[in-house]
Image (cartoon, rainbow, N blue to C red):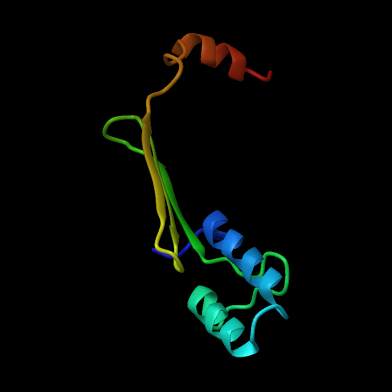
Length: 108
């Protein structure tokens, strides 16, 4: 399955802010070491350019049980945190009466 979208990790983002604030305040070799530990070769310079959280989403109507199935998962490729939800939803309304549908469909 391919990723549906990519997002910023709120936990890693806090660490990136701390890293940016440390620039010029700590030795450059220490800064580079911390950056590589945190984001490897990733770029945090442009807003939203560092997006390690992979989103995988799947949804479908099941022909067997008539339910809407929703599966969503998010996984940070950097810190390893994961979020997921699975939900099966039943139809909200009963089927309409066939005769009522036929009357509404008459455009004549």
